[in-house]
Image (cartoon, rainbow, N blue to C red; front, side, top):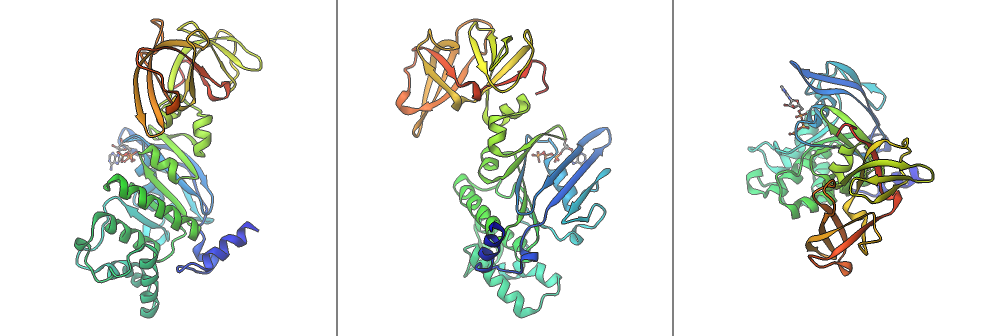
Length: 379
Ligand SMILES: Nc1ncnc2c1ncn2[C@@H]1O[C@H](COP(=O)(O)OP(=O)(O)OP(=O)(O)O)[C@@H](O)[C@H]1O
């Protein structure tokens, strides 16, 4: 049984603990709202997060990610709505009474304490006996690859090491839910990739529930079981990375996650697929949404889902403007023919099929990869 697998993995882990303390708890946010004067920072956000799930709040600056996280943490009081962790309503509880762990961008380590003392601190607060503290600090350092660093002070560590200590300090008392706000934001890409892998490994091994804030799409895609895409204090869509890519519910989601191409047109035919007569003249088929004939629409296609064909065969023809090699892929930009289309269409295709700059080519797309939005849909 899968549940037993999770428990047995945990028991073999250095941070092993009874299942009821080590496995993450579910969390429900219901209609939380926060205003600052006339500004609505978070507008009736609701979500149910399962035990052991890794959820990311993704959105541009000012979309309400941090405010939502801070309401869950207890540092910001919601105007209305409720927050329930593991069946307990914590909406009006002080942060330290919620039993949650935090890791923020600024590591917030105590500079006068050693690494070991920093990690021991949350356990001391909870009155854990000294011998037990020593054991748990040692185990946590080992898990984070920091054995041998216990006596150093934070200033004697690199940024990545300090961030790992901050992670250890959040993990050491085995909180059922860990909240992370751009914890890797200050680090360079290589270190970020490495720590992303570690965070994910630890989260899986301990079965923790994690809520993670980032504005970095790639980071969200790598880490998350589900992503809440936020805009203007609301959740546009809360789904798995695959669903967000394949079935974006708004143009904003299509654009934010994949830098989609948008092509305008009018629904000409419905049936097995929706046929869209594009402003550039061609016919594009989409299987995703049925809209009445004559509806003005925008069709979204991700760059990786477009293919090249002879200029006369595709739904759109154009001239290749740039070809950029990115490993085994090439990024191609195409200037579509006709004055009514987008300025440029972006494709990402295998390097072996790269066209030449100046080639006149056509575009193809599988109807399953085309999402159609009514023109005027927000975003
Ligand atoms: N204490 C505050 N007083 C007034 N306005 C605030 C306060 N905190 C946040 N806001 C506003 O609420 C909105 C949401 O802010 P929030 O920090 O939640 O966004 P965010 O998505 O986390 O952005 P970022 O990625 O830039 O951190 C913003 O417009 C912000 O200016």
